[in-house]
Image 1 (cartoon, rainbow, N blue to C red):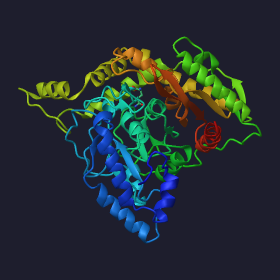
Image 2 (tube, helix red, strand yellow):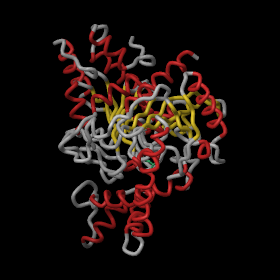
Image 3 (cartoon, helix red, strand yellow):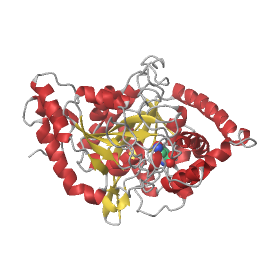
Image 4 (cartoon, protein in one colour):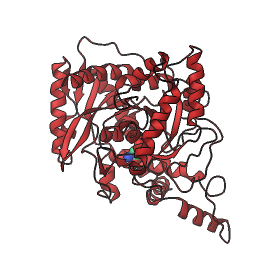
Length: 474
Ligand code: GLN
């Protein structure tokens, strides 16, 4: 019996290469776990039919002594990352039967290593939301308390890793969608610098914010996945090289900036505040210097740009070129019927608001102004990162909420307060489990988020490992 609860990618690699178990054994163990748990949790929208064939190929690579870091490692893939020949619906009815005709670059890279794809995971429709409640295929339940959400939008991927239904997963992060569900489920969620990982074959939500990244059980595993998927790509002109950003010289003592004013406001749950303060103390005891910094609330800025780009990106789903088509009396009626039936409420809301902020007469007041503010924020960040090495916040202002609890869109948007900033500026960020809080008799995971300057992923891995080491001691 393979102990999936304590298994990591590093441990699995050793065991696979030492032939303690085969990739087929491992895949079978995960399929059995999915069979047991997925009905209730709804992390996977589909489990692929060829998992064991993929695992056999991995075993052949291992047998030849040619294994890579991820050969035979079972992965869950968010439902908006294309795998050739597999369905990809982005959690939407409009793409219910869409089958990808090519591999996303991240998939091609993982395939080259012989990774095994178990299935595609649930998400908020087109990556719009924070809880998977906007999925057209039902909510993903939190493995720590099934009346609660797993977070979102990569809720299915985070839930799969947290509940031993995958050893690693790919998610996408536009404003927190890798980090927040990882915090809610008690796993690691890593958002790279914008452009470090190719977006080719990732369905676009907000093209200037979107990043593909790993969800894993510990920092080392996240680093291994990141190393496998990163790199420039001729198919995505926004990808950057390792040297695009000059390396900041490391000081003797690592300084961590904490935006106390933003964290101490009323909207942040007191249990989150207490847990955060405790983590800051832990970091001080590890020898890090903590410095008070100022960071603005960037939610309005984020949502204006998000609405604008989403409305533009979703225009391609017109019922003619892709997905669901419903015949009307004329072309205009075709559009109305196909989009009206195919898109859920949140997608329709953002298409409308995005079209509004981009329309003649309002463009300057909203979209134009938001772009200027974005430039100003970037300059501000450069200044902050000349004084501190890392920025620390909680990942989310509260633990996982109950399904249905946040029914108005605004209260859901407010949940993104700590995560959106990294996407606006394009810096890397990671959410790391910081313990549990007891709510109504259940232990719910919390997470803290570190942000680093552009291209400084390494320092996130470094501090993450140190932070994990104190947690493991406790
Ligand atoms: N919750 C944010 C939104 O609704 C972020 C989503 C994401 O990162 N894809 O836009």
